Length: 294
Length: 346
Image (cartoon, rainbow over all chains, first blue to last red; front, top):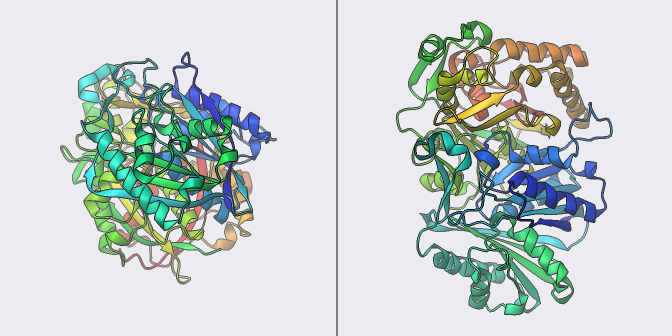
């Protein structure tokens, strides 16, 4: 049994100024493309980190589930079923954790559909120079299928030493009564280069461990810099043509995998390559890899 | 399908105790309420000065590990589901990197995958849901859920801003700080096991309880539409889903001979109402509630497992007990967790 990507959705309209809104738009597009009845979705995970107005409760996933409109209350709406939603937070790499959890739920509970959504808009909705993440959203709808394709392997690694890397926090003393609308994201000098080095070495381990033929493999990564995925690819010997770059959008953070896979499909690369490696790099330093057979 | 178990349980309760009486005297506006009479809460714990959520989580985790057969390097997955996210200071609320990264490093969990899960007061049970599934599917052998809550940050705001018992921040006056940590692995016998864990989000009601920074004072606030949150219709869904979950597991509630039920620790009257409404709705007899709310308040994500811990320590909860855990959280989340615990050694 494995988890396949049934469809993806993307939201890049710059007029949208809410993480919840972007995630919902992406999810609605994703569900429409899939052709499934949305009430068949049993699980929703939001892996976006930044929240409208710095809301910490409920899970943003619950608010997104409400906006999408599936399985809201099966007593009040008799055609609705049961769904469970939650937020997963692991910097830019959370989607890889979500894919692995979806895999486990498909096996342990025979769960059929799992929706992963993401968006990282500034809590105020405004675009500022010092907030490094793109105003976008993504959605990936996963389906439980009985075959040997889809997600077949996961690998997680951390540096021995704790290196926070990108830190996003709201300082309540500093921002006081305007804390709802402010956030500070700090990326220390040299962080991206450190992350590239660590990610490349983790990817080499993964390639060796899973005996991956890189000539048949496309690469989708988080986008800490315009050349981030290309530098990693160069280190491990993956051809530039096999790399999905999203430099036209900027740092797509937790939405990199949805948007990256969407681009892979639009460019027909799913016909050219046999598999995809998803690589989520983030503070920790953390590197999460997933192998997806097309 | 294999069953998992609670292999070890830990908790940390800060030393500072604040009575409800003291809290009421600190309030800026006199709300003229008998808070203890309404909630049954006599006192709650307050974090130490500069004691952060990460500090609290680490202490709970160390307590848990002290009675576990596992060493930190044996843990395959660590999940931190705390609502409050103060890491290196009590004023900086951290969104990334996750708290679990910091906790994992502090404990030496060199082999653990880490992630934070955020799901309001159902966070720890969400962590159990995920780890239970990942063990059952063979992806991991061991997992830890650890939550450290400096949740009284919302009480600090409420003390300044609440004006009456109808105030949307009223619920914030009931919270208390704590930490809990659980290690879960595969069950090996009939003495300790998790029979099942079922959770659902009735997202139609997701806007009834919102936590975000206040615009009147520096600090976080929790705004709850209490009347809607505790309406009979919400409890009807709780009851109906409970019955469905047992039927799905091929069981009945009464057939399981539970010794105790643990509701989310919101207040004694509310807890009794939950049980009463469930009994009336699905015609079932529930066991007596096992609480800790009177002395600890609503401890948010940790509430059910802090109740297990403190009641084991007092001797009220005996080894070999079967417990029905019912989460209730913003989202709105309900569900059930059926657990037997014998060898926690607390």
